[in-house]
Each structure stands twice: as structure tokens, then as C-alpha cells.
Amino acid sequence: MTSTSESLRSPLHARHEAAGAKFAEFGGWDMPLEYSGGGVVAEHTAVREQVGVFDVSHLGKVDITGPGAADFVNSCLSNDLGKISPGKAQYTLCCDPAGGVVDDMIAYLYGPDRVFLVPNAANNAEVAARLAAAAPEGVTVTNQHTDYAVLAVQGPKSTEVLKALGLPTEHSYMSFDEGHVGGATVIVCRTGYTGEHGYELVIPAAAAVAAWDEILTAGVAYDIRPAGLGARDTLRTEMGYPLHGHELSLDITPVQARAGWAVGWKKDAFWGKEPLAAEKAAGPARRLWGLEATGRGIPRADMNVLSGETVVGVTTSGTFSPTKKVGIALALLDTAAELAEGAELEVDVRGRRLPVKVVKPPFVDPSVK
Image (cartoon, rainbow, N blue to C red; front, side):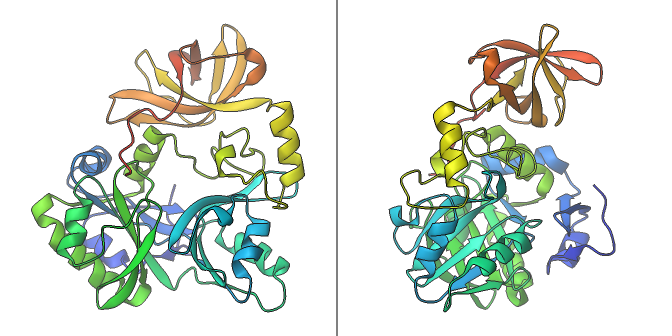
């Protein structure tokens, strides 16, 4: 990935430059990939063992307000907002009429008249446009993509850092509260994309620099380290968390990606319900699995998976696991191959056969709660 002059920039761009960040284009944004002084592995390890802070301001922000806003969103997105109460968050999917995934996101339920969505950077405008086109009279969909920064404080010591800042920390996983940092009111969410205990702070863009500085100062006692999107990717892959465009897409349904738990199957309606229900009933032609290398090598995305001379699937993501010290991958495998956990396969890594075994993610034990 390379940066371009047309990429959007985080309000913290100058801070990242001063910290020696290497940048990459991600979802139309110029974001830090890693920092000097250790790189991806050191940043990954800090999050698993201590605490790291990510600038994920490229994430989308869409506000839906007005009478019946929550019911409207619930009729569109896959998961069932009726299962959570105000102050809670929910992982959900925006699907197209054929059942493919336009994007996955977190929905923050304020109440019956407001839902705040955090989609992925590249799909924010599309999600906002689809919701706006379907919104009934009185419901307003506002694209607030650049109005807020998002900072993710993740790791076993994340609570101590937030307590040092006077921010709320006692709320449960997948819930949110409000606090003050950087001279502004912020949303403190018990969410994250690393598999560790952590928080995501939604901050007015104008207060982002002050908040970043305060977080790093408060975290000195806990060996906090800025972390880039390289470590975010290795952390999420170890957890088996999907990345849109890899494990989810218009061509990869929630049923295939093992994300059926994020679908409110009993709801009266949501976009893509009928084809997804039919696929669930019939069984998908392919299903997401994990692959762990048993030989030396690192699988990457878009590599063929073989059983003998037969191609039985394709990798969707692949990396070196800093925690397990082996190559790992996520892959869509043909259900007709009747593969099970522990099955021995091979990945074609640029013409060389890499032996792997089939595992069910996550590759490491989660510590989110």
C-alpha cells in the first residue's frame, strides 16, 4: 500500500510523523502502519502484554436520528437491535439484496430515536447513502466521517490508563459511556479489534491531538506504545476477526464467514434476509476456517489451499503470528471437501507447498472481557 496526495489524513497526522511512523493508504486514508522503535511485532506484543494506543480515525461515523430511528436501522441491518438496550453496542452487517456484505460495523444504541454507526473507512459513504435512500420521513442519516477521531486503547493495562485520565471504565463489554479528555466530551466504548480488554474513544476531531497527548502521558507508567495498522492486522487475524474485503464482501456472505451469529434470523425483515435464510438452510458451498502452518513459511491472502492435487479453497488473510511464532491464515474452504479441524492441507506459497493444519479460530485465547 502506498500513500497518495489525495488520501484523507487523521487530525493526528503530525503526531505520527513526529513518532517516526511509516504510512500506508487504507480505505482512502493515509494512516500509520508502524512506528520506529520496534515495529509491528513490538507493537503487537505491547497490546497483548501491556497496552497500546491506535489511531483508527479512518473508521466511519454515521448518525441516524429521528422518531423511530432504531426501528428503521433494525429493519435494514442484519443483527437484532431489539436484543440490546440503550447504552449498549452491537456488531452488525449491512447486506445487499443478494446477501453479500456491503460492510460490517458497530452500532451504538442511544435510544429509540438515535443510533450511531461505525463502519469501515472505505464503505462509510456507501452505508450512509443506502440508509439515507431508505430512510422514512423524519429520520435523518448524517455522514460524520471526518467530524470525529477514534482512538483505541487496547491491552491488559488499558483500564489503568483510562482510570489515570478519569475516564469511565466499569461499564461492561459492548457498552458505552461518556467522559472527558482533551478538553472535550468523548464516547468511551468497551469495544476493540484486538482480542484484548480495551476501549475505543470517539472524540471530536478538534480535540484529538490533546487527547492523544494525554493518553500517552497517562500511559507512561504502563509502558504504553503507539501501535499502527500493521499490528492491528496481526492482532485481529490471531483472533479470527473478519476484515471487509477479505473475510466479508459482496461475494462472501455472513453464512460463509461464520458471522451468522450477527444475523437476527427471527426478525421480520433486514436487507438480504431471504437469500441468506435460503443459504443457511441449504448449507454454504464454502466456510471460513483457520489454517496454522506446520512447516516454515507464511501464508498470505489469495493463495490456493490444496488437498493433494485438488484445490479446496483460498486464503483470505495471512500473516506471521507474533504470539504463536508461526504462520497463520484465514481461508474459505469448500464444504464439499468435508474438512474438519485438524485436517492436514497445503498452501501454495508462490509455487512452494506449505503444510498447514485446519483450526477453528481464534488462534489465541481472547481476553476482551
